[in-house]
Image 1 (spheres, rainbow, N blue to C red):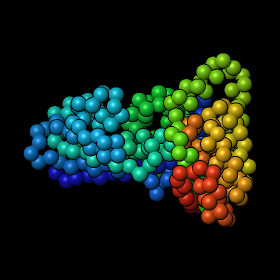
Image 2: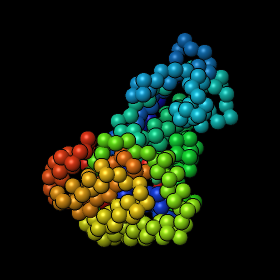
Image 3: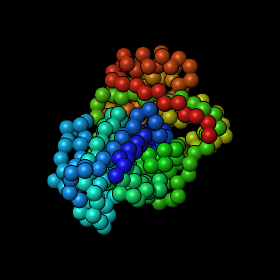
Image 4: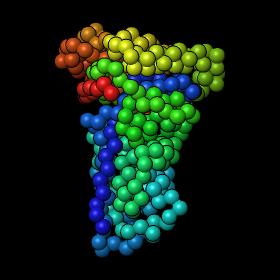
Length: 314
Ligand code: PMV
């Protein structure tokens, strides 16, 4: 039986995180320079139903069925098996690696699930469409995040920039002019689940105020889509600054993220904001000239890693 390998990219959210959970649009882009990879090999001497999983990044090596049923790696395998019992598939070993920093708003969990789902389904002779991979990844994301909006699994399964509105068919973004985004890691892990729960609590306590913040973020996403579509990406900078202020108002930023955002702007970035669930994780900055200068300023302000993510016209 041939081996199968699948990869899935990281992602960043350009505009609209958190508000997207409340029905406002958001824009997300794949980051192909970082990726999760799953490799499925048949175990010649194994018995049907023996599925081993190895994930050296988290020091895991175990039979899948010995993991907790809620373990996200087991959940990804179960998503593929569906109604099938494990006994119906040939013995195999799934090796999982990832260069996507975990807990940093770059889609590590969704990418790992998508890679496993794609590779294992191909191994058992049931290649899945992007839509099916996205759907199954979403099921696993619910374990990680509780109430995910669906944006991560969508951008990661389709590997294309998306304009996403919960409950509506998503759209691929059409990009008029290329631009450059710098991603910088604050070194503090992000806490998406907690951030989403905290925002929910605030919203319960004062719906009027938080609905208005979400609407303002939604307006930014809509304007950004138009600019990306037809205008000049340079104009996205001020929108990023505005979106960051609104995320600060939601109290999902952190002193480390705010410091990086400030440093990037001061060094010449056209705009900057935190990205993803927040409370740690990454910031993104729009840069046209002086990329090295902005990277240097970010490093001095405490960034532990930077990634250059060019966005091509499409
Ligand atoms: O932290 P990430 O990359 O999983 O992004 C979370 C984005 C949120 O809007 C905060 C939550 C969601 O499910 O959309």
